[in-house]
Length: 156
Image (cartoon, rainbow, N blue to C red; front, top):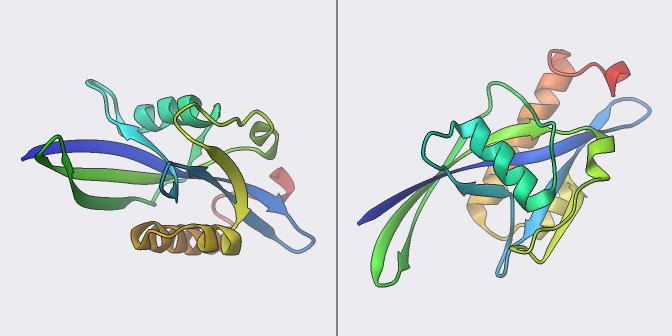
């Protein structure tokens, strides 16, 4: 059995409202599902380096700000050329500025990209593991905003 390791991110920006801020999430349309930025970890790359490279390649995004304390591991199996592959993907949480989202564009390896509210993103995601991961990320963001430890609203 072959093993593959990938890294990815739940990328979002904060939309300021009158009372708070709401995260708006980036989803990418793969041929058969909607998901998040992710890719194989190349030799010598750190998790964050892989995510930065993939965000640039897949969505033309730079200037990711990683939120410490959030990590989500996904594992699954698939067959590739008659060989069983165990895939592991570690996801982090990364914020971009609203200004940065204007530079986002879909790569050749995806069919579309969209920035969606939490509820709209949950409706778009069909893979159970991705839905669970987004729910945990949303809860984490809201908790950190409430605590005032991650982003002050006057900085948005």
